[in-house]
Image 1 (tube, rainbow, N blue to C red):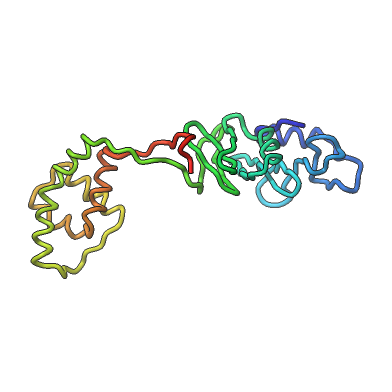
Image 2: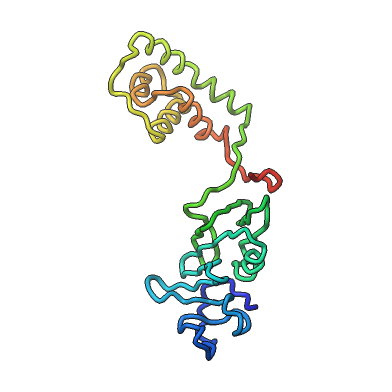
Length: 227
């Protein structure tokens, strides 16, 4: 079977390979194995962006575009064997708990359709896919963050008891991040009232402060701990 691992390889193979002399084969299809094996074929898109789908039976396992690829993580063993022949070199597939996973560097992905951006012909980023990571907390840094936020937290609780129905409070991840940065940079009492306008929940503020300060970071899940 042909090992096609890039857009250029697919395009060159399609242009240099003749369509088998059989009514089973369409003009935009080329055999990846023997002409008798129509279930293993390269299919050129006939509309939209130029693309080449490495197809197993009726499933486009890997589709190559000039600026990206789409991968189907079919869990069947035969599909996985086919997939290993047409994945780009920087992507690796493996089985875990009856599912097919993809590894790019130290990150892991799975799904019926995982899309990757290409830079200089290499997959560098999975777009629209869940990245399986774990959060790791540096306890010493986290304690320092809580110490820096403590004056505001205590002031906020006291003021909220006196004016619990304060109007105009709106909070988003962006406002929490801005508030966390201000407090970690040493914003004093004179700034607390303004910061309070954008903080509705102490837990959310603390969560974003951990992330902004680097006290909490995301790291790839070890293979043995994948879900």
